[in-house]
Length: 110
Length: 112
Image (cartoon, rainbow over all chains, first blue to last red):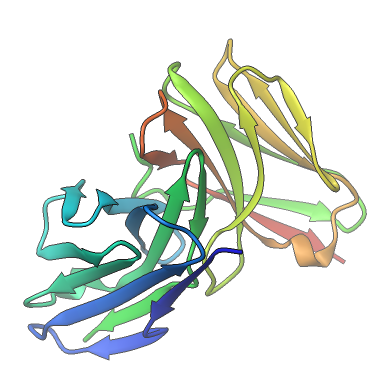
């Protein structure tokens, strides 16, 4: 069966510091991968998606970036965090028509 | 487009009653729809899906109805239980693409 991991589970970072969130998927190959952000009590905002290694599409211009160095690894990064980057970050994978989410990373920028 | 920035509507139901959560979707070319349940502090969990060539699909205690004429999707939960309390999201996939567009979500509160 397929599983998706995210780490860290929670993170508190100062404004201006860098960020690296990691997502890995097990039990499938060549999945589509996604990064979403969810503000408290709100819906899901698609940030990036990837259909293959090195292929990244950005949905929202911002100070975040994504990379896919391996087939089942998706990384979300920032060089300098803003207060507005606080939120719940969700990684998801899909193949065919279903999409499944990871457990999320709660990021607080102070 | 995506419903970012909207505060969640809330539905309160009595334990044991049936719940109906509604979702309006935007794109008539959407071919696939999913309902997710998200508990506090966790990622969304797949509940049930439906293809655009279907009107109804049933799962365990849940039924999804699709009305393509008015672009409306609903999730019915039978005999609602306290464990059903969560935020429920609908998602649509546009025309066999890679991306899913999510609705704003509805918070379901089950009253004892």
